[in-house]
Amino acid sequence: MPALPKKFPAPVAKPMAPFFAAGAVILYGVNSLANALSQTAEFKNDPRNPNAGKSSH
Image (tube, rainbow, N blue to C red; front, side, top):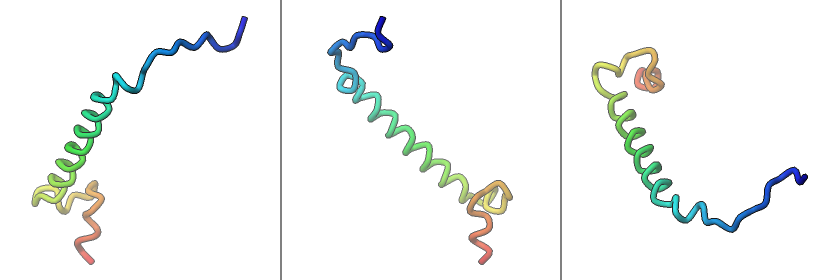
């Protein structure tokens, strides 16, 4: 009995390409939104904000 099962020549990446692209767009949008919200007045001086220490120098 072989350690790896038989490979079937089924395309995997090509049919999934729209989902990869949509995932990248969603991740970019969430990152942009998080960066924009971290610069608002409410969260600018929050100690959890990674950019909080940069503005005081």
